[in-house]
Image 1 (cartoon, one colour):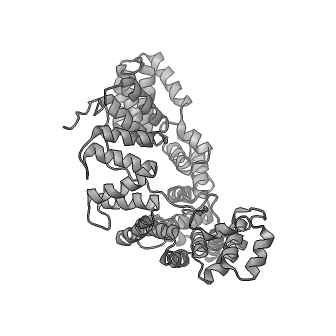
Image 2: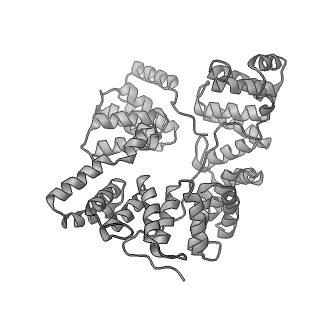
Image 3: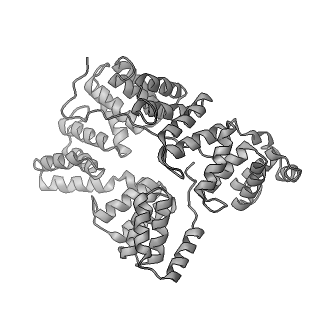
Length: 452
């Protein structure tokens, strides 16, 4: 029997896909690990003698600046030498550096060539990265069937993230016939290895009865495993199970605890439910000021019904209570905290908030500042918005060269409309301006680790 949803809470959403990209850190398959304890001098000698493992290890030392001065170009030089000798790890790393433009000009076609060569040799990280490229259409035309093919190869080698993503493709029927049973099989493999996203999704499938008999208690168990790893979606859903008493005893205090964790991480649905609990006094003392604060924050985070509910609550409050509640809102802002710590998504959201005047006073200069920080880290949406501000001179001096650069980079990072907008801008520029703008594009390097 399905549980009843409390009218004051949000219904469970659809399966959340949390795609995980592999960076270039050392793994068990990176054969240069055998050489990691050798000194740079020893590696240089072996590299000069033509040993591919040593060449790859030396490239990695230069890339990370371990025992030598960090030098991306020198790293790429040694990766290329080993890659051309057929060394899979070097091919993969050269492909990744080329994809991200680190130590070499960014070139998606060239990057794909090297990653494909490594993948063809069975290098699991390359197989997974190639799958991600096809899945998202990054550097290649989007092709779900190809994504599934490469996810499967990596999953068969027991790469946890690939197992999870393959399960997600089965769940949604992307590139393959939808099959909940196959989905749960692959997602379970990843969940049992401790991948929080997989644990959460497995819990959701038990809650919905997709590919498995509906079992709220089992759902709660998997939500708890993911929630203990600080996954906000799992914390929220676990809180709702406690709130509704679905398969486990109803417990408002535990519901409050888990929903609060998720709300503090900026999950709008959790903020709305937490506000409801404060308004009704469920699991916590009734408090209209806190209820107002959380309804307001949920509306800032994009939940439309929260604004309506906040306005209804406001009618029950005195003018001094509303003023005090608004002060609470201003003091609590996780987006600002995350943005100040360098989170590019938070920086973009903060820029958008200032540009639209949503929850703050409209301030284009402040918006441009936060867009710039996210754009420098390679976030396409921030690059596009920053380019628009440069083109219009909103919050920042009008500059067609910078506008062209950021529109171009946004198109490179996958935002299709950016290419169209860049081409329209190009018609307004002189030949010399265009050449100068193209030089700015070539000189630009991301200020964060690349997409892989």
